[in-house]
Length: 317
Image 1: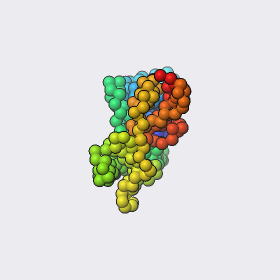
Image 2 (image 1 turned 180 degrees about the horizontal axis):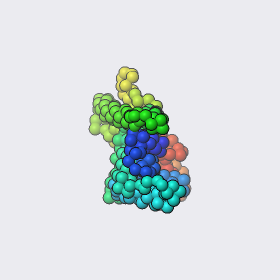
Image 3 (image 1 turned 90 degrees about the vertical axis):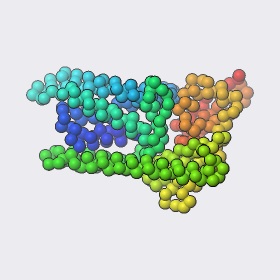
Image 4 (image 1 turned 30 degrees about the vertical axis):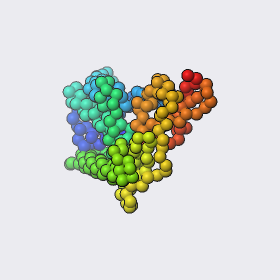
């Protein structure tokens, strides 16, 4: 998910009552909820293929989730001792054990939220590079923003006034968000079943189907189906009949040419195909100046797209 969603979840957890557990509790929840995304810097300082190969891996996997809370707790305790309590000697010290479990809670929410979208997460890194996908929420979901943002704001105001039950709005917001996630998950499962049945009726039984969420609307699902030689694209819309409508012609994989095999053996090509979920390939150029355009159909069909596509030069044999 986007970092605003991660931040709002940490903020809502804090305002729900966890902010009172120890000094720096809110800091632990806000920072921990975003900490695994330190790998996002690769999009700015490295080649795109480096980001494809590293993103949502080492910093999001089970080993990182076990280590990050200790790193964050140590940093917060150092801040508490050398900065906060030097400025305010009368302040109560932060409780190390409480900070640790709050940091663990916050860090653990991050890969869980990331799993909810079509990009996925490599939970088992560094022991396995396998990707896991929830296909539940779009990576930016304004309805989640609205629920968590309202809960954070309303509880924050109540805490400031000293109202009884100040954490109640944030707790309701967390409950509503959880219910929304469950409903969206059920919608995705049902949409995948609808698309699979329609594809089977059209001669594509056993297709591997992604029913991904679309932005803004919870009633539509993006369908990408692997039918062997290519991909069928379409949508499932719960507000129309027929529910599933294919869009465009079959997108050929184009993976049989020798240039593609050479491209996928390069470091960049290998990273891309390991990341890509529905890859297809376009070979362009003259002999000796050949390039292979790699594209992931779950995000784009444009080989020049800034995200979801990669051009790999292969040249002569």
